[in-house]
Length: 271
Ligand code: OAD
Image 1 (cartoon, rainbow, N blue to C red):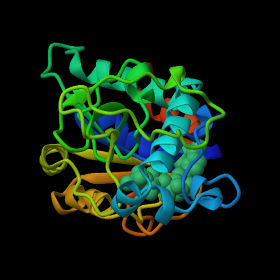
Image 2: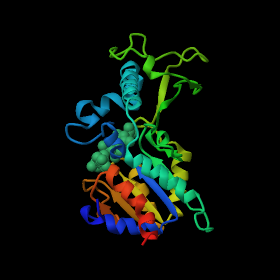
Image 3: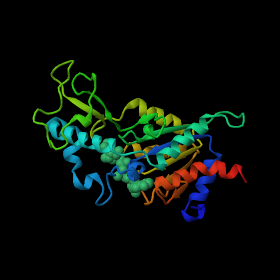
């Protein structure tokens, strides 16, 4: 693939080559090529087949914890069966490369803040600073907050709603165990959001990849980078709410565009 094949790629690659402090903001499209369905796309989006009102809200958890539990366990098993794609691997490589000091200069940094509740960035070898919408694999008691262990692969995959509901907390004995995801109506983890905002205020490039830029407050984050004078590259095959504000919109898939961006420094230094 050459830079001319994908609109915006040549300009984005030049920004990536120069950047020392990078923030990657990823959304569901980041994991689409791994086989994890996105939320809002026709036919394939999870929300097309399930209602977010029923399954991912605070009220749903209170009214029908068994249904919410089984849906998140289904998603956890689905993610366990997926592998990181070339885009996840490229970001992990870029993070390692920036943290090194290639020619005696100061080390750079790449901060990852994701809206995704999967663990595909980590399984590609990257360190994630912020899971803005939590994680499928961090469990805790909904009553007393004690962290809990659960292995979704041990559940009966055919059981739609466990008759007894989600497991009971072994510490308080009355609360139900829930996944550490942010449900609609709940606050985002404060520290994760603050750390992401701080990184964006001090970056020279933000890369926004695979998000429809519709869900607040995550959708405000790219504007923090723009407000601080940084360039913002959006990687998305579709135009989003954010596209006209982006410094560059690269109209392509994460698994193709991100490796090309990360290769940019090598290409340039060999000229
Ligand atoms: P969406 O499903 O809203 O948007 C996915 C975006 O990814 C779309 O803009 C697609 O065009 C783009 N896309 C699809 N395939 C791609 C690919 N291969 N490479 C790059 N981009 C691609 O997902 P999010 O914006 O992440 O929240 O959704 C935000 C939040 O809404 C989620 O975190 C979740 C959901 O409700 C909670 O559950 C709290």
